[in-house]
Length: 410
Ligand SMILES: *Cc1c(COP(=O)(O)O)cnc(C)c1O
Image (cartoon, rainbow, N blue to C red; front, side, top):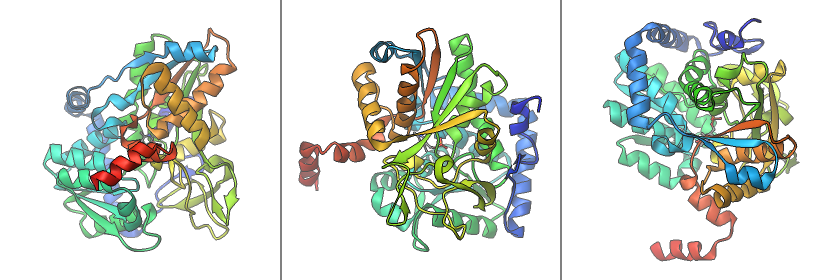
Protein backbone atom coordinates (compact mmCIF):
# COMPACT_ATOMS: atom_id res chain seq x y z
CA UNK A 1 0.00 0.00 0.00
CA UNK A 2 1.59 3.26 -1.12
CA UNK A 3 -0.55 5.88 0.52
CA UNK A 4 -2.67 5.12 3.56
CA UNK A 5 -4.20 8.56 3.15
CA UNK A 6 -5.53 7.68 -0.29
CA UNK A 7 -6.65 4.24 0.78
CA UNK A 8 -8.68 5.45 3.77
CA UNK A 9 -10.69 7.83 1.60
CA UNK A 10 -11.16 5.25 -1.18
CA UNK A 11 -14.41 5.29 -3.05
CA UNK A 12 -15.60 1.76 -2.31
CA UNK A 13 -15.51 2.08 1.47
CA UNK A 14 -13.63 -1.15 2.24
CA UNK A 15 -10.58 -0.96 4.48
CA UNK A 16 -9.07 -4.42 4.49
CA UNK A 17 -11.91 -6.60 5.76
CA UNK A 18 -13.57 -3.65 7.53
CA UNK A 19 -16.16 -1.10 6.49
CA UNK A 20 -18.54 -1.80 3.64
CA UNK A 21 -22.24 -1.15 3.32
CA UNK A 22 -24.37 -3.81 4.98
CA UNK A 23 -27.78 -2.18 4.74
CA UNK A 24 -31.32 -3.06 3.64
CA UNK A 25 -31.90 -2.86 -0.13
CA UNK A 26 -34.00 0.30 0.26
CA UNK A 27 -31.07 2.23 1.71
CA UNK A 28 -28.62 1.49 -1.09
CA UNK A 29 -29.80 4.15 -3.56
CA UNK A 30 -29.81 6.70 -0.72
CA UNK A 31 -26.20 5.90 0.19
CA UNK A 32 -25.26 6.05 -3.48
CA UNK A 33 -26.86 9.45 -3.92
CA UNK A 34 -24.86 10.73 -0.94
CA UNK A 35 -21.64 9.22 -2.24
CA UNK A 36 -22.15 10.82 -5.65
CA UNK A 37 -22.91 14.23 -4.15
CA UNK A 38 -19.83 13.98 -1.94
CA UNK A 39 -17.49 13.07 -4.82
CA UNK A 40 -18.83 15.98 -6.88
CA UNK A 41 -18.57 18.44 -3.98
CA UNK A 42 -15.00 17.38 -3.28
CA UNK A 43 -14.01 18.43 -6.80
CA UNK A 44 -15.88 21.73 -6.64
CA UNK A 45 -13.75 24.66 -5.52
CA UNK A 46 -16.80 26.67 -4.46
CA UNK A 47 -17.80 23.88 -2.04
CA UNK A 48 -14.34 23.92 -0.50
CA UNK A 49 -14.44 27.68 -0.26
CA UNK A 50 -17.85 27.64 1.47
CA UNK A 51 -16.67 24.97 3.90
CA UNK A 52 -13.49 26.83 4.82
CA UNK A 53 -15.48 30.00 5.25
CA UNK A 54 -17.78 28.23 7.72
CA UNK A 55 -14.82 26.69 9.56
CA UNK A 56 -13.21 30.11 9.93
CA UNK A 57 -16.08 32.48 10.45
CA UNK A 58 -18.75 30.33 12.05
CA UNK A 59 -16.78 27.82 14.10
CA UNK A 60 -13.70 29.92 14.83
CA UNK A 61 -11.04 27.80 13.13
CA UNK A 62 -8.13 27.43 13.13
CA UNK A 63 -8.24 26.27 16.74
CA UNK A 64 -5.03 26.92 18.70
CA UNK A 65 -2.19 24.44 19.05
CA UNK A 66 -0.99 25.23 22.52
CA UNK A 67 2.27 24.20 24.21
CA UNK A 68 1.44 22.95 27.73
CA UNK A 69 4.58 24.32 29.34
CA UNK A 70 3.51 23.83 32.95
CA UNK A 71 2.15 20.35 32.42
CA UNK A 72 5.30 19.38 30.52
CA UNK A 73 7.51 20.64 33.35
CA UNK A 74 5.39 18.83 35.94
CA UNK A 75 5.61 15.50 34.09
CA UNK A 76 9.28 15.99 33.25
CA UNK A 77 9.40 14.15 29.93
CA UNK A 78 8.38 14.83 26.33
CA UNK A 79 6.90 18.19 25.31
CA UNK A 80 3.11 18.11 25.38
CA UNK A 81 1.07 20.18 22.91
CA UNK A 82 -2.71 20.45 23.03
CA UNK A 83 -4.88 20.95 19.94
CA UNK A 84 -7.79 22.88 21.40
CA UNK A 85 -10.87 21.67 19.50
CA UNK A 86 -12.87 22.72 22.55
CA UNK A 87 -12.66 26.29 21.28
CA UNK A 88 -14.86 25.47 18.31
CA UNK A 89 -18.40 26.82 18.23
CA UNK A 90 -20.53 24.36 20.29
CA UNK A 91 -17.42 23.33 22.22
CA UNK A 92 -16.10 20.31 20.32
CA UNK A 93 -14.85 18.90 17.04
CA UNK A 94 -18.29 17.52 16.11
CA UNK A 95 -19.18 20.80 14.41
CA UNK A 96 -16.52 20.04 11.73
CA UNK A 97 -18.42 17.14 10.17
CA UNK A 98 -21.82 18.64 10.96
CA UNK A 99 -21.00 21.76 8.94
CA UNK A 100 -19.64 19.62 6.10
CA UNK A 101 -22.67 17.36 5.96
CA UNK A 102 -25.13 20.26 6.25
CA UNK A 103 -23.44 21.90 3.29
CA UNK A 104 -23.73 18.63 1.35
CA UNK A 105 -27.39 18.31 2.32
CA UNK A 106 -28.08 21.81 0.97
CA UNK A 107 -26.29 20.89 -2.25
CA UNK A 108 -28.48 17.81 -2.61
CA UNK A 109 -31.57 20.00 -2.15
CA UNK A 110 -32.56 18.38 1.15
CA UNK A 111 -34.93 20.25 3.45
CA UNK A 112 -34.61 18.21 6.57
CA UNK A 113 -31.83 16.79 8.77
CA UNK A 114 -32.26 13.81 11.03
CA UNK A 115 -29.74 12.43 13.49
CA UNK A 116 -29.27 9.83 16.18
CA UNK A 117 -27.80 10.82 19.50
CA UNK A 118 -26.79 9.06 22.70
CA UNK A 119 -25.66 11.67 25.16
CA UNK A 120 -27.09 14.47 23.06
CA UNK A 121 -23.84 16.09 21.95
CA UNK A 122 -24.18 15.03 18.33
CA UNK A 123 -27.86 15.96 18.38
CA UNK A 124 -26.92 19.38 19.66
CA UNK A 125 -24.31 19.95 16.93
CA UNK A 126 -26.83 18.79 14.30
CA UNK A 127 -29.57 21.05 15.68
CA UNK A 128 -27.06 23.91 15.55
CA UNK A 129 -26.25 23.52 11.86
CA UNK A 130 -29.93 22.91 11.05
CA UNK A 131 -30.77 26.27 12.64
CA UNK A 132 -27.94 27.95 10.79
CA UNK A 133 -28.90 26.49 7.38
CA UNK A 134 -32.67 26.85 7.80
CA UNK A 135 -33.30 23.10 7.68
CA UNK A 136 -35.90 21.19 9.67
CA UNK A 137 -34.37 18.94 12.28
CA UNK A 138 -35.47 15.79 14.07
CA UNK A 139 -33.22 14.04 16.56
CA UNK A 140 -33.86 10.45 17.65
CA UNK A 141 -32.76 9.65 21.16
CA UNK A 142 -33.36 6.59 23.32
CA UNK A 143 -36.04 7.36 25.94
CA UNK A 144 -33.62 6.39 28.71
CA UNK A 145 -31.04 8.82 27.33
CA UNK A 146 -33.66 11.59 27.15
CA UNK A 147 -34.19 11.08 30.89
CA UNK A 148 -30.45 11.17 31.63
CA UNK A 149 -29.49 14.10 29.40
CA UNK A 150 -32.11 16.76 30.03
CA UNK A 151 -29.79 19.78 29.51
CA UNK A 152 -28.90 18.74 25.93
CA UNK A 153 -32.55 17.95 25.16
CA UNK A 154 -33.46 21.44 26.35
CA UNK A 155 -30.80 23.09 24.16
CA UNK A 156 -31.80 21.09 21.08
CA UNK A 157 -35.40 22.19 21.53
CA UNK A 158 -34.31 25.79 21.94
CA UNK A 159 -32.56 25.49 18.57
CA UNK A 160 -35.84 24.42 16.98
CA UNK A 161 -35.18 20.69 16.75
CA UNK A 162 -37.77 18.06 17.54
CA UNK A 163 -36.37 15.46 19.94
CA UNK A 164 -38.08 12.08 19.62
CA UNK A 165 -37.69 9.72 22.59
CA UNK A 166 -37.35 6.18 21.18
CA UNK A 167 -39.19 3.71 23.38
CA UNK A 168 -38.14 0.47 21.67
CA UNK A 169 -35.47 -2.03 22.71
CA UNK A 170 -33.14 -0.87 25.42
CA UNK A 171 -34.24 2.75 24.73
CA UNK A 172 -30.63 3.80 24.07
CA UNK A 173 -28.37 4.82 21.18
CA UNK A 174 -28.72 1.75 18.98
CA UNK A 175 -32.52 2.03 19.13
CA UNK A 176 -32.19 5.68 18.11
CA UNK A 177 -30.03 4.66 15.12
CA UNK A 178 -32.65 2.15 13.99
CA UNK A 179 -35.41 4.76 14.29
CA UNK A 180 -33.37 7.28 12.28
CA UNK A 181 -32.75 4.70 9.52
CA UNK A 182 -36.48 3.93 9.33
CA UNK A 183 -37.21 7.64 9.00
CA UNK A 184 -34.64 7.92 6.21
CA UNK A 185 -36.17 5.00 4.29
CA UNK A 186 -39.60 6.65 4.52
CA UNK A 187 -38.37 10.12 3.50
CA UNK A 188 -35.53 9.65 1.01
CA UNK A 189 -36.46 12.69 -1.11
CA UNK A 190 -36.19 15.54 1.35
CA UNK A 191 -34.10 14.12 4.22
CA UNK A 192 -30.40 13.83 4.96
CA UNK A 193 -29.33 11.53 7.79
CA UNK A 194 -26.47 13.36 9.48
CA UNK A 195 -24.46 10.54 11.03
CA UNK A 196 -22.27 11.64 13.90
CA UNK A 197 -18.90 9.89 13.64
CA UNK A 198 -16.66 7.84 11.32
CA UNK A 199 -18.94 4.78 11.66
CA UNK A 200 -21.94 3.50 9.73
CA UNK A 201 -22.27 2.24 6.16
CA UNK A 202 -20.17 3.61 3.31
CA UNK A 203 -19.81 6.54 2.55
CA UNK A 204 -20.15 7.93 6.12
CA UNK A 205 -16.68 6.95 7.42
CA UNK A 206 -15.06 8.48 4.33
CA UNK A 207 -17.20 11.63 4.42
CA UNK A 208 -16.65 12.34 8.10
CA UNK A 209 -12.91 11.65 7.89
CA UNK A 210 -12.76 14.09 4.99
CA UNK A 211 -14.51 16.81 7.02
CA UNK A 212 -12.42 16.18 10.15
CA UNK A 213 -8.98 16.05 8.53
CA UNK A 214 -8.71 19.84 8.85
CA UNK A 215 -7.58 19.20 12.47
CA UNK A 216 -4.35 17.42 11.49
CA UNK A 217 -3.78 19.78 8.56
CA UNK A 218 -3.77 22.73 10.95
CA UNK A 219 -1.50 20.91 13.42
CA UNK A 220 1.08 20.26 10.71
CA UNK A 221 1.20 23.95 9.82
CA UNK A 222 1.09 25.17 13.42
CA UNK A 223 3.86 22.90 14.67
CA UNK A 224 6.05 23.56 11.65
CA UNK A 225 7.66 20.14 12.13
CA UNK A 226 6.47 16.56 12.46
CA UNK A 227 5.53 15.52 16.01
CA UNK A 228 6.83 12.22 17.39
CA UNK A 229 3.45 11.18 18.74
CA UNK A 230 -0.21 11.98 18.24
CA UNK A 231 -2.71 11.07 20.94
CA UNK A 232 -6.51 11.10 20.71
CA UNK A 233 -9.46 9.53 22.50
CA UNK A 234 -11.71 7.15 20.55
CA UNK A 235 -15.45 6.82 20.73
CA UNK A 236 -16.65 6.24 17.18
CA UNK A 237 -13.32 7.67 16.03
CA UNK A 238 -13.98 11.03 14.36
CA UNK A 239 -11.65 13.22 16.42
CA UNK A 240 -8.90 10.58 16.24
CA UNK A 241 -9.22 10.33 12.44
CA UNK A 242 -9.27 14.13 12.30
CA UNK A 243 -5.94 14.42 14.07
CA UNK A 244 -4.26 11.33 12.60
CA UNK A 245 -5.32 11.44 8.97
CA UNK A 246 -2.92 14.04 7.62
CA UNK A 247 0.08 12.27 9.22
CA UNK A 248 -0.70 8.71 8.15
CA UNK A 249 1.93 8.69 5.42
CA UNK A 250 4.59 10.27 7.67
CA UNK A 251 6.10 7.04 8.93
CA UNK A 252 8.07 8.68 11.74
CA UNK A 253 4.90 9.92 13.45
CA UNK A 254 3.54 7.38 15.94
CA UNK A 255 -0.13 7.35 16.91
CA UNK A 256 -1.82 6.39 20.12
CA UNK A 257 -5.59 6.08 20.49
CA UNK A 258 -7.15 5.92 23.94
CA UNK A 259 -10.38 4.05 24.58
CA UNK A 260 -12.62 4.27 27.63
CA UNK A 261 -11.44 1.82 30.28
CA UNK A 262 -14.36 2.67 32.59
CA UNK A 263 -14.04 0.64 35.79
CA UNK A 264 -11.44 -1.65 34.23
CA UNK A 265 -11.33 -4.26 31.47
CA UNK A 266 -13.70 -6.84 32.90
CA UNK A 267 -17.34 -7.81 33.20
CA UNK A 268 -19.59 -7.40 36.20
CA UNK A 269 -22.83 -9.40 36.36
CA UNK A 270 -22.29 -10.27 32.70
CA UNK A 271 -21.95 -6.62 31.62
CA UNK A 272 -18.91 -4.82 30.28
CA UNK A 273 -17.52 -2.22 32.70
CA UNK A 274 -15.74 -0.32 29.90
CA UNK A 275 -15.93 0.57 26.21
CA UNK A 276 -12.54 -0.74 25.04
CA UNK A 277 -13.40 -2.46 21.76
CA UNK A 278 -9.79 -3.29 20.95
CA UNK A 279 -9.27 -4.91 24.35
CA UNK A 280 -12.38 -7.06 24.50
CA UNK A 281 -14.27 -6.64 21.24
CA UNK A 282 -14.73 -8.96 18.30
CA UNK A 283 -15.13 -8.41 14.61
CA UNK A 284 -18.72 -8.29 13.48
CA UNK A 285 -21.22 -6.54 11.25
CA UNK A 286 -23.50 -4.17 13.12
CA UNK A 287 -25.35 -1.01 12.10
CA UNK A 288 -24.31 -1.34 8.47
CA UNK A 289 -20.54 -1.83 8.68
CA UNK A 290 -17.88 -4.33 9.65
CA UNK A 291 -15.59 -3.51 12.55
CA UNK A 292 -14.76 -4.39 16.13
CA UNK A 293 -17.73 -4.38 18.50
CA UNK A 294 -18.30 -5.25 22.12
CA UNK A 295 -20.80 -8.03 21.65
CA UNK A 296 -22.23 -11.12 23.29
CA UNK A 297 -21.82 -14.71 22.11
CA UNK A 298 -24.81 -14.32 19.77
CA UNK A 299 -23.19 -11.36 18.01
CA UNK A 300 -25.54 -8.81 19.56
CA UNK A 301 -23.87 -5.60 20.60
CA UNK A 302 -23.68 -5.02 24.31
CA UNK A 303 -24.00 -1.95 26.46
CA UNK A 304 -20.76 -0.31 27.53
CA UNK A 305 -19.67 1.77 30.48
CA UNK A 306 -17.65 4.99 30.73
CA UNK A 307 -17.68 8.18 32.73
CA UNK A 308 -17.68 10.03 29.41
CA UNK A 309 -20.90 9.83 27.44
CA UNK A 310 -19.16 10.36 24.10
CA UNK A 311 -16.93 7.27 24.41
CA UNK A 312 -19.68 5.04 25.78
CA UNK A 313 -20.30 3.19 22.51
CA UNK A 314 -19.85 -0.45 21.52
CA UNK A 315 -18.55 0.07 17.96
CA UNK A 316 -15.60 1.84 16.38
CA UNK A 317 -14.91 3.25 12.92
CA UNK A 318 -13.76 0.75 10.26
CA UNK A 319 -10.74 2.83 9.21
CA UNK A 320 -9.45 2.70 12.78
CA UNK A 321 -10.10 -1.05 12.92
CA UNK A 322 -7.89 -1.37 9.85
CA UNK A 323 -5.19 0.92 11.27
CA UNK A 324 -5.25 -1.23 14.40
CA UNK A 325 -4.83 -4.49 12.51
CA UNK A 326 -1.94 -3.24 10.37
CA UNK A 327 -0.25 -1.79 13.46
CA UNK A 328 -0.24 1.83 12.28
CA UNK A 329 -2.16 3.07 15.34
CA UNK A 330 -1.57 1.71 18.81
CA UNK A 331 -4.60 1.38 21.08
CA UNK A 332 -4.64 1.71 24.81
CA UNK A 333 -7.24 2.68 27.41
CA UNK A 334 -7.59 4.91 30.45
CA UNK A 335 -9.83 3.99 33.38
CA UNK A 336 -12.21 6.53 34.90
CA UNK A 337 -9.96 7.32 37.87
CA UNK A 338 -6.98 8.06 35.59
CA UNK A 339 -9.26 10.22 33.48
CA UNK A 340 -10.43 12.27 36.48
CA UNK A 341 -6.81 12.72 37.63
CA UNK A 342 -5.77 13.92 34.16
CA UNK A 343 -8.79 16.24 33.98
CA UNK A 344 -7.82 17.85 37.31
CA UNK A 345 -4.12 18.10 36.49
CA UNK A 346 -4.73 19.85 33.16
CA UNK A 347 -7.10 22.31 34.86
CA UNK A 348 -4.69 23.09 37.69
CA UNK A 349 -1.55 23.40 35.55
CA UNK A 350 -2.90 25.02 32.38
CA UNK A 351 -6.31 26.45 33.22
CA UNK A 352 -8.05 24.25 30.68
CA UNK A 353 -11.09 22.06 31.40
CA UNK A 354 -11.02 19.14 28.99
CA UNK A 355 -14.23 17.28 28.13
CA UNK A 356 -14.19 13.92 29.92
CA UNK A 357 -13.79 12.22 26.54
CA UNK A 358 -10.74 14.36 25.78
CA UNK A 359 -9.36 13.77 29.29
CA UNK A 360 -8.76 10.17 28.12
CA UNK A 361 -6.29 11.56 25.57
CA UNK A 362 -4.76 13.75 28.28
CA UNK A 363 -4.31 10.68 30.51
CA UNK A 364 -2.73 8.76 27.62
CA UNK A 365 -0.40 11.65 26.75
CA UNK A 366 0.74 12.07 30.36
CA UNK A 367 1.63 8.38 30.67
CA UNK A 368 3.46 8.48 27.37
CA UNK A 369 5.35 11.74 28.12
CA UNK A 370 6.72 10.32 31.38
CA UNK A 371 8.57 7.59 29.52
CA UNK A 372 9.97 9.72 26.72
CA UNK A 373 13.01 12.03 26.66
CA UNK A 374 12.57 15.80 26.72
CA UNK A 375 13.41 16.28 23.05
CA UNK A 376 10.33 14.33 21.90
CA UNK A 377 7.05 16.01 21.01
CA UNK A 378 3.50 14.83 21.65
CA UNK A 379 0.36 16.44 20.24
CA UNK A 380 -2.83 15.47 22.05
CA UNK A 381 -6.28 16.26 20.75
CA UNK A 382 -8.48 18.08 23.24
CA UNK A 383 -11.63 17.17 21.31
CA UNK A 384 -13.93 19.25 23.50
CA UNK A 385 -14.22 21.52 26.47
CA UNK A 386 -15.40 20.43 29.88
CA UNK A 387 -18.34 22.76 30.56
CA UNK A 388 -20.86 20.18 29.40
CA UNK A 389 -19.69 17.71 32.05
CA UNK A 390 -20.56 19.93 35.02
CA UNK A 391 -23.20 17.57 36.42
CA UNK A 392 -21.10 14.42 36.03
CA UNK A 393 -17.96 15.96 37.50
CA UNK A 394 -19.61 17.56 40.52
CA UNK A 395 -21.31 14.25 41.29
CA UNK A 396 -18.13 12.23 40.80
CA UNK A 397 -16.19 14.60 43.07
CA UNK A 398 -19.03 14.51 45.63
CA UNK A 399 -19.36 18.29 45.73
CA UNK A 400 -22.02 18.81 48.42
CA UNK A 401 -22.37 22.52 47.85
CA UNK A 402 -23.26 21.91 44.24
CA UNK A 403 -25.78 19.24 45.20
CA UNK A 404 -27.38 21.67 47.65
CA UNK A 405 -27.44 24.36 44.98
CA UNK A 406 -29.33 22.01 42.63
CA UNK A 407 -31.87 21.16 45.34
CA UNK A 408 -32.49 24.85 45.99
CA UNK A 409 -32.91 25.62 42.28
CA UNK A 410 -35.47 22.85 41.98
C1 LIG B 1 -18.53 12.83 20.78
C2 LIG B 1 -17.25 13.18 21.35
C3 LIG B 1 -16.14 12.30 21.30
C4 LIG B 1 -16.22 10.91 20.73
O1 LIG B 1 -16.49 10.83 19.39
P1 LIG B 1 -15.38 10.50 18.29
O2 LIG B 1 -16.16 10.28 17.06
O3 LIG B 1 -14.62 9.30 18.75
O4 LIG B 1 -14.49 11.69 18.21
C5 LIG B 1 -14.93 12.73 21.82
N1 LIG B 1 -14.81 13.94 22.39
C6 LIG B 1 -15.85 14.80 22.47
C7 LIG B 1 -15.64 16.12 23.12
C8 LIG B 1 -17.10 14.46 21.96
O5 LIG B 1 -18.12 15.31 22.05
